Length: 110
Length: 119
Image (cartoon, rainbow over all chains, first blue to last red; front, top):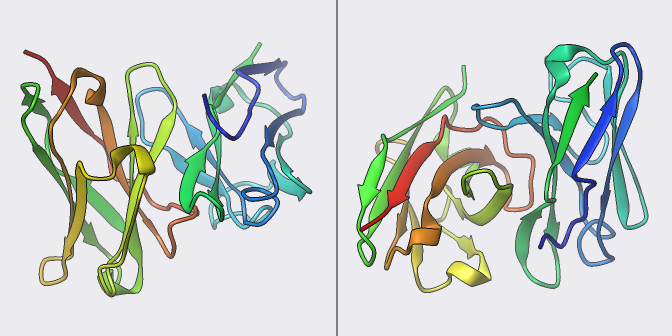
């Protein structure tokens, strides 16, 4: 059971927008930066968002991140079939002194 | 380009140890740290720990304390993760990834190393 809570799955049609939530507590999301990763089937995860809302070079602006209080959100617009993947949030917990990932969300593009 | 290349697949018996390597290239190794994560079959990502390549400081996940050791060899820009007293539930793909600190922004990731623990 992950300390960071994500919905197990989300789905939307091609071209539409989807959001994925990541809920934590004051000692993790509430006090530290959040990162988001995309894991395509059979591959290593790839960094999509860091420091809550920043995109590494090469990541399209269809991907966005935000944080409010003890929750963070990943947004994906203009959905493509190639976006079908598992998405994970990640942060540090200042009380437990450990890193942590959300349980992951499987995105299906219908 | 920045790249992390991990060692190959391992098969171990319960009670044995495994040591996975992660060779970095394309950047100054001691400027960053290396995080280690694992993913059991069909499961999510688990944070195992992080080591600073600058001074060797480590943070380990509580549930692995006493069984895991992370080290670096700055002469070869290689990080290592050793896990001892292996159990069947340690069967997983193990990933290394570069980061400035232990709390995220892992980029890039190694290709992963499958460790299977079975009698």
